[in-house]
Length: 126
Image (cartoon, rainbow, N blue to C red):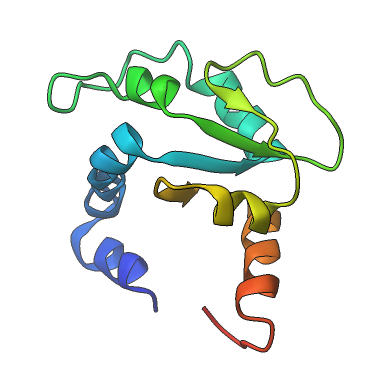
């Protein structure tokens, strides 16, 4: 059982859900890397969401809107619907290597799989 699942099991889902706010510095100084499907879901939910209490005085929606977002897709979707989103040139691995900020991948199993294949080609686990 993963640490997160174990923590949720022992302390309830609020304990694990609250961990997402530990990304504060990364969201202020880093970049999100998302696959198209995850980006589309977030783009529908996040931009105008103001029903979550502020963290350190900053509403989570404002923080998510401000962070740069790298969107990966096999096609060329219009990513203008969500502020600070762009389609990087090149592949997922090249984008991570070129990035000088911390990179956070949220959801986006295809993105994680692509990174894993290149970073740990013979690995059987993360």
